[in-house]
Length: 355
Image 1: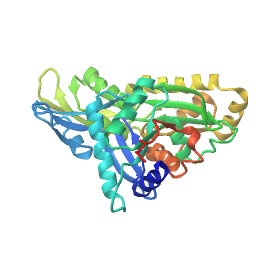
Image 2 (image 1 turned 135 degrees about the horizontal axis):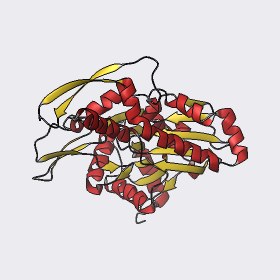
Image 3 (image 1 turned 30 degrees about the horizontal axis):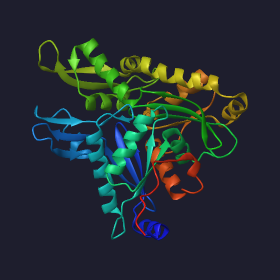
């Protein structure tokens, strides 16, 4: 009876993989591909506790809401910081994905969720519980560097070294992978959001200018660099003068932004070097041949791959479509759940039903 129930549930289920990121969340549906790519932001009415918007609509409200409405991110550093809000956000993504599926009926889905390497068992449980409460039938967890390596089509199940650096919004995951497991790793709470913070602090210190997160991110994307640029670029930076309280516009240059980001970038490179030092010599020989693979949105910072190559003496390349590598890898694990079962951690057995 239990086996029959599982078969029926599997037939009606809309299985999905979720990259639950600090900055953005992506959802992959089995046999459909990526159907959702939205910011991990939730807008809440503090007077009533009501959730007003989630995802793209909520991000539009960041920095533009009255005092009683808060646009918040329920994940900090890649882990859940507000359980109830994260649960509501997951429910929104699961229900929206189910509605986008081709199936007329959608039973409680099996869900694979990417998590950082360095999370504690308590933080793992928080992700599992939030997904279960949001409507998932069964929850699997996959560490983000493994998912990213699968998404980059690296031969992670073979006896060879694969080096992945996943620079996300909240965390940077540095890992050496072999035989379907992580041999050595570093997990830093320094990534894309910290780089935005560096630009915000630079504006306050150098120009006495308060700027928002969206402005900082736009500057990072447009003229940010991990290395001094050969061609000097400039951009208008608008905000509120701290002293006068009035709006002001100043011109910032790419060299200034590069110096503002330098400390955080060096910490990421240092983590890469430390991971190399801990790697067994045989795997290191493979990595010297295969190179280092950069993924995640932060890997798109200009010159990042060149800097890592220069500092480590190992070729470094950015994977194809780095922004979606984790969810594509988790989706591939979803499509091949039996052959890749060793890289997944299941939360618990599916609920038994009376016979």
